[in-house]
Length: 459
Length: 180
Image (cartoon, rainbow over all chains, first blue to last red; front, side):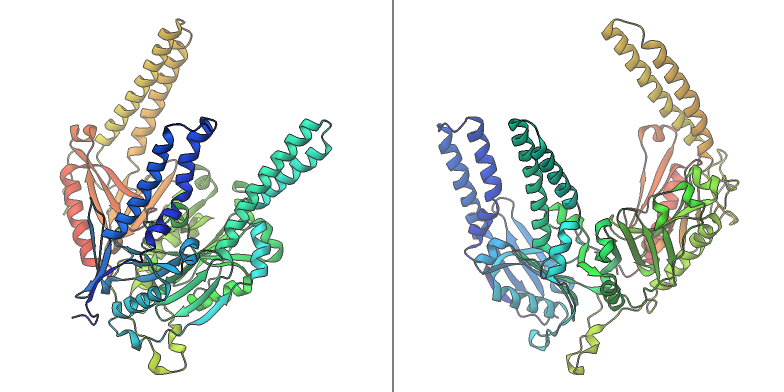
C-alpha cells in the first residue's frame, strides 16, 4: 500500500528538444566543420547533406520528446521513452535512493532542470526526466523523496543546516595550483620567456604562439574547475548530505550518509604551504550513470573542493563521528624500500575505521568504515618478505578506492589480517557503527525524520 | 565433507611460505589445488615458447637471414626451462581454507597474496573451465564481491570439487547475506 497518489501521464517540457539539440551542438559543429576544413571552404553538393544532419538531429530530439512520458501509478514511477526501441522504466518509489536536480547551463537559461532519480544498486535502475520547469522539478523532487519514505509531501519540512561553505576567494586561488594547471602555466611561461629572448622574428613568433596555446589549455583547465567548484556548499538535509555547487551549470546532489563507503583527503603539492585540502567521499551504487560523462562518473563525489585542514576535519567528524584513528608510521627500514613515499606513509585502525596515508606529490589520506569493507587482502612482494614487511588492503564497493596499509612490519601485518576480518564483522552488526543523525538536532521534535529501513547490500 | 583424492587435490597443505610471517599459517585444514594445474601451466609455457620460436623462424624466412634463429631458440629454450620450473613450484602455493565466517585464499611464491572474503559479502560465485582445463577435468572458481579489488579465485580444482565448493559457498553467502 503506497501513500503516493496516482498521477496521469506527463510530458517533459516542450523546450526539451531545443536544449538537447543545443547540448549536441558541439558535436554537430565538429562533424560539420571537418569536411569544410578538409575541402578548404568550397561549398559543394554536400551542403544539403550537412543541413540534413541538422534537421535529422532536431527531428530526433522532437520525436524523442513526443514519445517520452512519465507518470506515477500504484507506488511506482513509470517512464516511457524511445520510438523504435521502446524503453519502459518501472521504478518502485520505495526503492529510490536519491533524487537530484541538475541544471546544465543551457537548461538554466530557459529556466529548466533535469530530475535524476537513483536507485543505487542496479546499473539501469536510474531514471532521468530531462527537462522540466525548475519549480516543478523541485516539487517533483520533494514529492518523490517523501513518497519514497512513505510520508505525505507536506509533512516533510526541508530544514537544512549548512555544515560547510567554501569561500569563493580560496577556490579562485586554489584552482590555479591544482592538477595540470600549474604545469601548463609554467610551460606557457617558459615558452614566452624563451620566445622573447629568441634571436629571429620567426622563432619569436612561433615560440610565443606555442606558449599561448599552453596558456589557453591551462585557462581551460582552470575555468572547468572554477565552474564546478565555485559556490560550493554542504548542508545536512533529512535524507543525507546535500551538496550544491557550480557557477554556470549547477548541481544539487544528495549523498545518503549510510552509503558513504570511503572518505578521502587530498593535499596536492602546491596546496600544502597553505594547508589546504580537498575532501571527497566514495558513494556506492550508480557507478556510471547514463547521461553523465565518464570523467564525472569516475570521480568520487567532492564534498569540499578546497578547505583548511581544520574545516575538513570538522566536517569529517560531523559525517563520521567515530572516525578518529591513531596512525603509526611503518618501520624505518621502509625508507630503503620506498625512499620517496616513506615520508608520509602512515596507517592505523580503530574498532570501526581504518586509515592510510600515501603519496608523495599528492598526499592522500583514505578512511574506510570497517562496516563497509568487502574483503581483506594481505600481500608481500619478494623484496618485502626479505625485509620482513607486508601490505594489508581493505576493499570497499566499487573500483575506485580502498585502504592500503602499506609496508607494515610483517608481524603487525599478520596480526592486522588476522584480526581485521573479525573487527569488520563486528562493525557490520547493527549498532556497530555510529551513524550520525544530525537531523535530530533540529529545533522542533515534530520535524524529526525517521527514514524507513531500506534494503541494500551496500549499506 | 572432503574426500582426499588420489591426485592430491583436496589434500591438506602446509604453508608454502617459509621464512615469513605468513598469516593464518597455523590454522589446520588448508587445502591445495590439483597438481594437474602444474601440467596445464607447463603446456601454456610450452605454447608460448613455440610461438616465440615460430616468430623467430618467420622473421628469418622473411628477411632471408638466419641470424635471428639462434637467439630466439635460446630465448624459447630458456623461457621454457625457467617457466616450467617456476610454474611447477608455484602450484604448491595455491591454497584455500573455509572458515566459519569467511573464505581464505592464498597464492604466489614470489608475490605472496592472501584474500579474506566474508561469506556475507559474496555476490556471485562462478565456476569456469577453459579448453585446457576441461581436458584435464579441472575448473576454476571465482568469487565476486561488490568491490572490484577483492580478487579471489582458485584455479585447478577438479570439476566436482569446484561445483561442490560453489554450491556450499552460494548457500553460505545466502545465509550470511548482509541486508541484500
